[in-house]
Image (cartoon, rainbow, N blue to C red; front, side, top):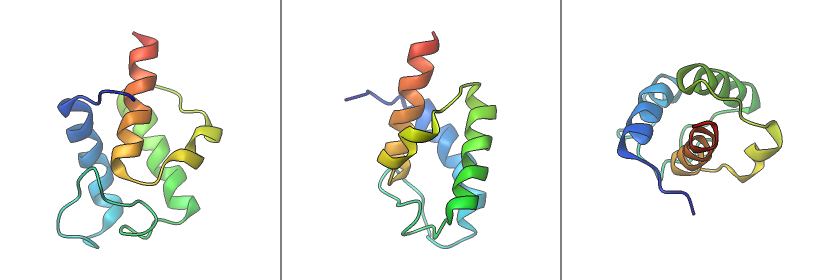
Length: 85
């Protein structure tokens, strides 16, 4: 299990918020990307590009199958950030 920093989660929530377009009142680690935010595959890819730019990482596309929630994505980001440090 990856220990996600508060900074990583906060930065991710800032990135995700515009993609949610007000679909949920509060976005947190338990918010589902495709369920709660209703992101389709194209919007998920747009989100991933924004994440890669913000965190200066490259996320393997095959790892996205494990991502369901904002928290899952934060863990994936933290893992990539830690690996590149």
